[in-house]
Image (cartoon, rainbow over all chains, first blue to last red; front, top):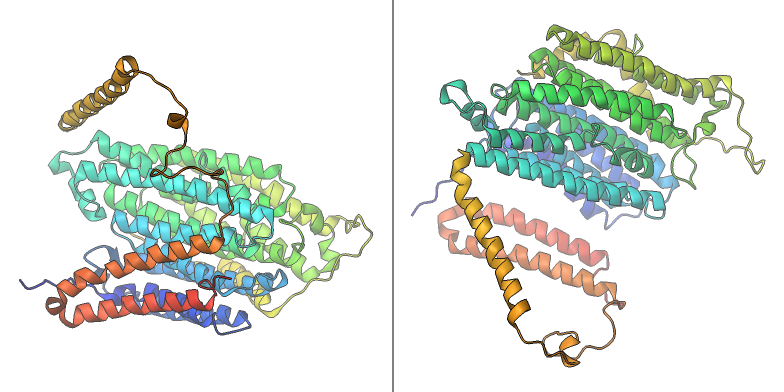
Length: 488
Length: 118
């Protein structure tokens, strides 16, 4: 009996393959080199290749691959760029940050690349099983990365909490997949979508609705939406700062990537009303709880963790309208958030004391006199995260709220704007500390150590700052790119 | 549609009743003759010594884990061997990549010193 060979289309998964091969190479070369920093540079080369491949696939025919398991459409490729940029920028932070803490191991870079592959897979997946696979590839790598600073108790705690709660959320997700499969007889997003179409009369299937609810729980955990956010502050606080920077943007973008695709492709006709209501409620409580909790934080890293919860709420506002304008706004927001947030974490990474986890707000007092450059950078990112023009964060928020207004949900946009105003308190609180408070005297009377501004972390700062400013003044090209990528 | 699941519900109920009955009956009907040997730990007829919370060399776990991983990965080669001629070059290349990754992880494990017992 002859065997029928499947059509695989390796070209469509080229970027993922490039990153995977790099990760294996990094693990192999790690055995033979003394200076592990070279592995970071090899990873950067691999990511650059993946970025070039993503660019070259853009605009080409969106070919499905591996029997409609994945697709390389504009949406997936745009998200690929976000993941690659997030990975590259945090590798640049790691090159400086890990060395000071004697954490420079080759496995770190390999795991970071594997997590990136998982994210790319989530963005490109057109089958619930592949979404789950990408989710696990990403999550398992991130669990280990969170606990990478194993000499610190806080880091181990972060890894353990993330693992236990993450595994729990994965189980929810998988149960949702099982129920959706039970109701529709398929795990393929397109087929699920057509099963619900009006003429087949399957609109209000209760089992599928329960399945959709469980899927939403799984995604809400990954994007850190309230009430599934409990892990976020502890994990972001305890993980090495370079890892926090990566997962706060990468894992969030990956979660949103497949959330939007699953909702828009599979559940767009039958259940739009149901999930719109659920996500609108989630968005409101996520924004509010995140912002109010952030107000009370004394640690800058923890404050940014709560702020990342709040940002998940803003992005959800863009998902709720179920429109192409909304998807475009989500993509734009994810892109802008990547740069602002990694930039802010790069400053934290420089200021963080070696002996402890986190960065107390007191360490920022009088920073403007100690290092005007760092203070200026932090000011820029804080202002952009607040959403004040003319920085990129302003446009992200504007597009997201505009999408809500277009869909006759102005109330959602109003709540979002009120929340942005609340967030100004804590973002600008950091600025006040830096510019208007004297340098805090150390308890032992020891003078604060000078900052080590090594090359790689400077590149991160400069790149994120330039993007934040340039696309803030002139967002059109980025907006056009997001328009090409959006669907709906 | 939910009606199709009625048999599962019935099965669930029957299973619960059956399990409950088979636990309850011996409890009420069975004779009870306690003695010392019955309350000891049972493990394949071996006599128990000490307590289970002992320190075991970490190498034991690592080697056992590696054995399971490599054992199961080699398992993939059997079905490939059965349809080797039908799969032609396609299968050979795929299994070649698979084996390459397997060898790479073996070299990695070896160089990391996992296989050293001391």
